[in-house]
Amino acid sequence: MPLPQDFLDEVHDRNEIVDVISSYVQLKKAGRLYRGLCPFHTEKTPSFTVYPDTQNYYCFGCGNGGDVITFIKNYENLDYIDAVRLLCDRSGLRFPEDAGDREDNLKKRILEANRLAARFFFETLKSDEGLEARKYLKRRGLSDETITRFGIGYAPDSWDKLKNYLKSKGFTENELVEGSLCGRSQRGNCFDFFRSRVMFPVIDVRGQVVAFSGRTMGSDTRKYVNTKDTPVFRKSRIIFGLNFAKNSGTKRAILVEGQMDVISLHQAGFTDAVATLGTAITDEHAKLLSRYVDEVLVCYDSDAPGQKATRRAIDTLRPTGLPVRVISLEGGKDPDEIIREKGASAFRAALDKATGSIEYELLRARRNVDIDTQDGKVSYLNSAVSILSRCSSPTEREVWASQVSSETGVEKQTILSSVQRSIRQKIKQEKQKQEKELPASITGKYHLKPYEREKVGSVSAEHRLVAAVFLNPDYAKKVSELVSGNDFISVETGSLFDQIVSQINEGTFNGYSSLSQTLTTQQNALLSGILADNNGVGFSTEDTDYYVSKIVESRDRNKLEVRSADPDQLMKALKNRKGK
Image 1 (cartoon, rainbow, N blue to C red):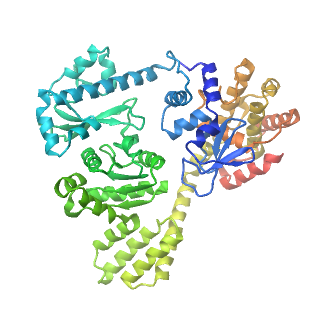
Image 2 (image 1 turned 180 degrees about the vertical axis):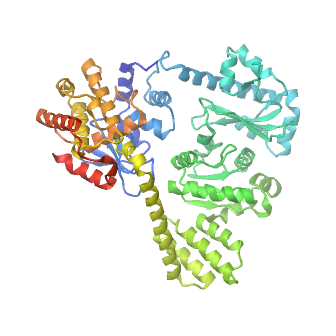
Image 3 (image 1 turned 90 degrees about the vertical axis):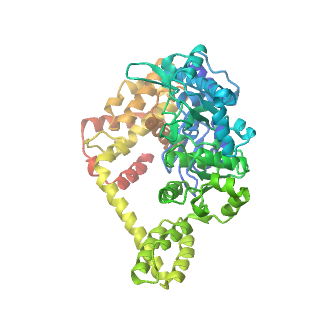
């Protein structure tokens, strides 16, 4: 069920977009606008702009745009309803109890079931049934305080104890299965998903129990079992321990492999330790970390799989712009083992010796070859060139090229020239890839109907007409009698035009506030881009007459083969048309 429009209007009124975004992004006033570095992609020159007049934002670098709800949705990685809830909490506005669809209600039920399940597991750990689990945790060196802080519990060796407990609290079997607290047999019988396991609640950055990770205490060959994906949990979006680490005060994250590593490090005073859940670090994990920390230290196992995961983590984190260092532990130990056997000081010493990601990769490359031989030297140089081509700045490349030069005796300039060739080659390969994909992607990139020919000016006219009716609703009645979205080249722009005009004619239009609930992600970005391009333009009725005539002319007579258009030329042509 959609949220009431008057409620959404109040959400927007109470959450002025500049106030909200400035609590996440450092904004600087630029005339009537506000600008800052985009939080959705790495950049050094601000291309992220907030428009108070139309209450929207747009990034000219990555194309992310929308209203205040869209910003919270994208920044906090929430769905629409949860983004609205967060803004309600921020502004003291009561969320309508009967609002939201089935999925929203199910999410609330799953979160409550998880909260009660965490309490059930914690109490079971303290009971007679949890004796062996308590002994295991003590052998792992965990104190009662740490067990309580992380809410560690125990799932009994039973097929239905948790199920029966939660059913007594009013939950249905379907809700428990949806939340991955229970499973179903082929015969349809409902059973506890976690059995005979030490249980680690997975808590998101808002303090909600969204999932569990269970460590076997029985005969199950699977050491760890995690909650399956649910409406409140996606393992590619959750980082274990970040709820604590974000408040550690260090502005860094020590990225380790497992929950026990995280918990042991926290107990030893390293409260910025985090881990992904049984999966390699993803782009979503990297973006989430970049919102809370300024540096990441990777501390994975020193075996082959661990080192492969380290290199993958470096590559995944690099696009965020976060500095990455690597902690190397002696003897193939993991952080938990190091702390239990040698104490926190041993881990501190390893942390202090952490190497930068480029240094780490060069060390690994050199370790595998004998550079005293010609073949070994060539192999190392080839690896070094590839590594240095990924450096973020020329200065960084200069520094490391000097080191490689001293190691191999090869001139630094020769190494740098090879690096430049490697960079050019990668750029060329990427361009070739884009050109190969262009025929299939150009219509989507510019929101054009496939295989249609049209004047470039008509695309600009469509955008301008949308901006004109958005900013001047009085124009909508006359315009809508002459053209509709079906007349547009751009499918998305046509749909956007129809939605705006329909709301205006029905008397329900209230700017972005009345649109954000129904717009797709693509339409949100498109509308914000259109408003950004036309910011400050004063549209007259003569202007709209001209835009309508261009669209009608385009509809009736095709002259431009869009598929063959160079994308840069097309965009340049569009920009040149703005003044017409």
